Length: 451
Image (cartoon, rainbow, N blue to C red; front, side):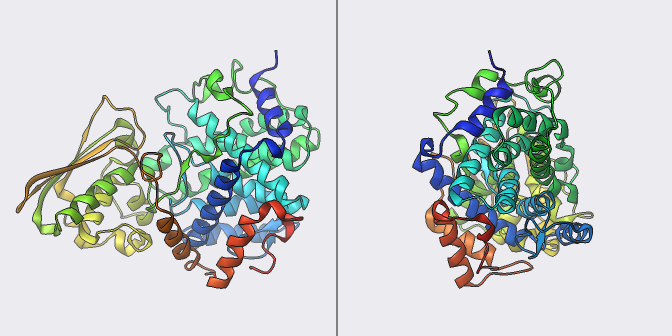
């Protein structure tokens, strides 16, 4: 019998483009466009320009574009900085029902290798679907509770390596080694979530770079242990227990790259249900901040773990705002939104928002195991007495889809800001390029005429 790693390697390499359903190809295009957009908006977030300067100073062969900054870098460096900018403002897509950011890990790696190898858009699109499928499967098959590894950093390298291996035309055995080499680089901790720092923005970048290095090393003949998932000291034993049967269920018949939600707030996904509930109450009752006497948010243990701590913007203010439930609720109450302006350092330290933080308490419902919901927000108000709102899951779930117009508005806003804003003409060209990926003969020309 073949082991799990071998089965995943065969899946990544041998699945034909024709086997990929249109819904998965369409999802790949949409989520690619969303990831590019949030990278444009995130490139001027603290830490990104400094990291790009380091990559540029190190130099090397010009394999692939640094998307927002321009110029070309070695594939691993391009994957690293592009992943960082896409993850920086917490606006990238999140897995449905699982705590993983698939596309910021897989897309930067896959696109860097696709440019380097000058593969067709059709080849690239297949690799992207399959790499994202594998990463989401890892997260969905993980046992509960999360032990504290950051899923994107620990699991994203597997999907990135699989996508890169396909683009490098590795065989199954080489791809199995690439997956093993990705595991040897896996890391990442949720400590970066609960103690906000700029390092949080590097977690997906480490995974993207690991995927590139793993595939390139395997191409050069570097080998890895075969049982890196189920072995005595493999991923399941050391990092996070998981269900091997669930990981490989319907492999090649079901593709999970579409199991992601496009974010409507540039904030940790654990905040989104509370934001939705607060904004619904504020708008329904036309609440003014001083109308509200007290707020209680009933949340899941996982939400409390990631964003339930005290709010302290004295250090990295933007990251603190993105990873704090109390800030999210107070911001929604005072500003009636949480967008790009509300995560800037001045907004994160706004005394008008800080004045209402003391009204907010969190109550943990230990019976719930969700990573983003359900959440109940209760308010005691001067004019309306006690009011409440319950939200089961983030927008973008199957029961709560994001309107296409909202996605379009998000993309327009994101591409129009940052260190290198795109014009409406450039955005239209980029959008058309993504939609026509399957017809593109050479991915090295993907940004031609746009940047």
